[in-house]
Image (tube, one colour):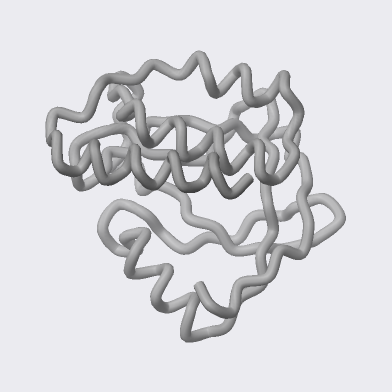
Length: 146
């Protein structure tokens, strides 16, 4: 997003990061939900046009809903929350997706104890070799840039 600007990071005690939102590719995607053992978040500011583009990319209306969450030190912030109809607690994430989430955690300086929890999330290889190769190339670019 061309207008995005990192405002800061925070920790929300009552929520948890779950990889249980059924993605369009049938794998588990991130969702924040209660109860949880706490979640670290990065707060970004973006333009209305970039927000509309992000809504489309994230699938608002197709499993995610645009929601407001109270974030310590920042107040009310927008995020995406999975619709209950798209939650499957037994759905594994793809290996490349979990690695993208981990790269984001490392980029934002989230604690090692938090990233270790995410490293334990159950994953499976993506059966779509083309998509998997493309996403792993993205992971490699992010690693090289950090």
